[in-house]
Length: 628
Image (cartoon, rainbow, N blue to C red; front, side, top):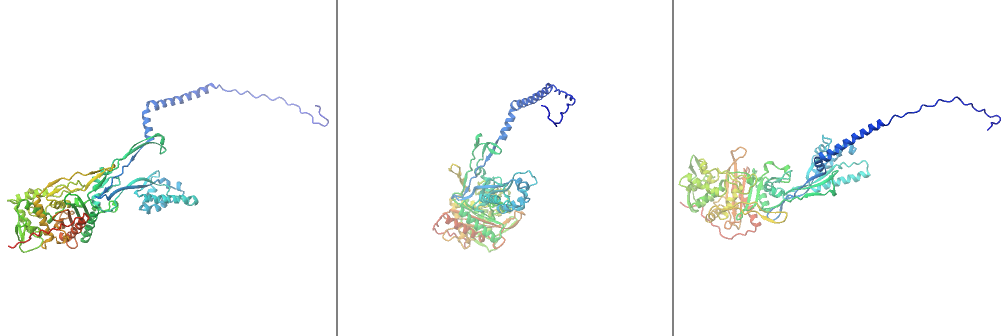
């Protein structure tokens, strides 16, 4: 194409540019070799490790995998209940919850507030009955990684429901109000169980309690722990992320529930006895006291009450000195209630009869001591029956002196009867902490003990031993080993009665009936010391006791043991009642004055409860005195 007129002339081409040098690539083979070597080493390491895991250490890793994958949980057995003889619950187990928390969920990072633990503690304290500052300390622990704390043990379902309702309310409010924080989101509950005692302190000394570890800590709860506790079960299952894997299966050993235990105790009679002794201990400002009610024919204990007592469901507020069963654990000198043992020996050995005349001076010289009765008196002219009715120490010493040609022989005879009646040995209950008392062999009796033991000083017994003496007389001279348990009922519902108690003849039936008539004089005769124990319509046999008391703190004599023992109806015995009060400091301390009324109150209630009618027979009215 030719340029037209006025066109710009074409540019001349410049000199040619030099060509760029050619790029040469290095050989790839060394790099490929290096990469191949590295891959080979890596693969070799994997193969070696695989061989180690799957072949050499296969068993170890399998065990670790099983350990981490499978978990085992205990399935707690339900503890058996305890009922009275009529099936009324005295101790049972109910559902409960341990209230727990995750402290990491109360931090500022989680709640976006600084006082999360304080707010949560303020809400929980009145519900759990705990101190607010203690809850704050648990929710803000020194160990910031701690993820589990137990705020309260064994709370009722109602308590957990209250907390759940609060959590739900806070959650709903937080959804609509962004300023609200659910400070209870980190509070949880672990299912548990709780031992409850519907009667509060009723029969607490018998029942005992269950400790925080779920095991019996005292009384029958401890003695019968294996029977009541049952056997825990186990469940093993696979888990992932803390949750059970349903498809992996599981193995379970079911828990075996504990057996229920039925006692010989009658709840109503127990209440009456406990009420009576507590009232009198308070009125007399005494250290304590006990009442035992026993079926004379079967040996079954219908009531065993102590004062002061405790609530086994609230041990935190219990007096440590009151924990236990003082009626079985206290050893004390019985005083004149033990004179019936001396009379039993004298009658059985034909050393005297109820009508035997005994001239009782105001003082009696024996050994290195001068003995007296509880009151100064002119010379008494008493029958043997009168010696018991008026509770004469001097007359008892004189009567038991006839048991042998020498005092040493008389001591051996009296000792043998005491042992037959159960003194110096355990009752057979097997109760934790029970004392067998103190009864030294006759060759170890001191000069004074030879004459004090016949009237109940210098020998120690517990309250059940004292009650058993009178039950033996009431049962025609046959001692029946006391019992507290009637039987057990397993998870199959079958009742298994307790073994029959051991029976031992101690004195003849004739002697027992004679003693019963003599004991009536203590209550019915105006000369007797037990007139406050009279029950209208019934013939009552009983004996008072007022003994010098050894202070357990000092080991020295201080105060008195006041007591009353007896049975009714006297001519057809059904129930024995024994009462003792330790160290009464206000009002009278004589056994007939403060324990006689308790005997009457408890005996009347027991006779009505058991529907025992009066026999209608006339009392024996044995003579108490004679004319010289």
